[in-house]
Length: 580
Image (tube, rainbow, N blue to C red; front, side):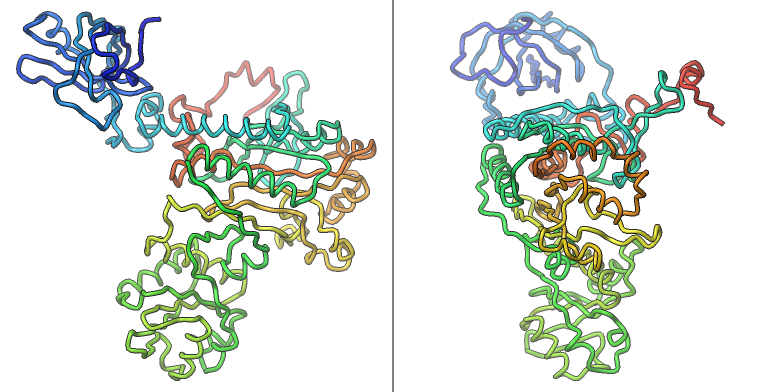
């Protein structure tokens, strides 16, 4: 080994010991006849000292060191005169007797410090340098720790880690596939898996009972902070289980991770019906760190000549407690917020419940004081509160108010990243109607089983059928979802029929799975948790990019290696691809 210790382990217990250290130059400074160098590796920082009185040539060599030079030193561990108790090695330093430059370095394009001066695109271009920074490195280490704890927990629960193929058949799963041309089969293509869904079900048919995989998945879709074209799932499947069994096992996994990795003990997760989540929060992934539930107001708001409310399918509001002091400028900013194109509302109505008990609103000319007070009573408002109301088509208005609710919580500091409020959302609709294609689509995927008590409505009222499905949500982020699966050929054929597949189309796409169901497929179900999103929650980040070693930008490009990129004409010819 080139070193005897790392840069993060020496303490006063090692005083007087001769050691060899390797690492990068973080910074250096001259003080009188001495030069101090901070040397860094993955494990920490150790201060080196060079003294002109002891060895002027060695000190002169140290003064030539630049940032990020890779060096090796030999020296004695001595007590540090000016201690730094913020770091583990802050009570010692190394009195250097030998210095070897292993590699020089150009001046980095940005500061390799916790607070860097590099913009995101620049840091992504030089990601190998960005990964030297403490915050990014700590995120990658955190990712490793969480992965190890996942494996420990699932192994104890008798899950087997089994790999599934990466080159698979293209099947309709909601997003676009990434496709890979086959040289040996001209004109035919593999697809990269959006998930191992059918393979994990086949493993259950094979009798493996409990499967998991921390697996790469691929989706060709528009990107945002919590999406990458390639992402990682904690993918799991179990046989001979019901929904409650799966919820208990994976609630236990999340509790285990928070306790072992964060030292946070979580209580039991509440269960919320999908219908209640949409009614009370306008979202199937509600953030329940704060209250501000929706209050439906049709009965008390449609009592005047105010046509905006009278003509609306739904009048609904939230109560922002203790916000009556919001200025007109602040309220106008909220109106501008809901009018943004991505939200699309025409505006909102406010009612101030003044501290003296009076009520003042933006629609005073349409409502009497008694009518405004009835709205306030329905919303359980008190003096000092600010009520915010929206109206329009029910589904659209709920989604718009959901965005306003989250914005108000942000402004009020209610979305504390150190507070964790997980829940299960259950009983999703099995199907949704797509106006563009004029057909049903699966809310989750076509292998999701209906609730047994709703089976009788599959033909007469399919949109009212609930799925035996569940999502886990933490702080308003969908961390994962799953379902009890269909496990017999007849029911799966019926599902494909509801989704508009012809018998031939279903056989061409999923014949292998349908055939497998005829050979004694057991009842089974599973879940997939977003590993990247989970790590980002633990790290307190809004974006998953900084928990990935080598992420891509919003255009799906790796700017470090310049990918995607053209391939040679010879490769195109071998694949029989003609680019026009």
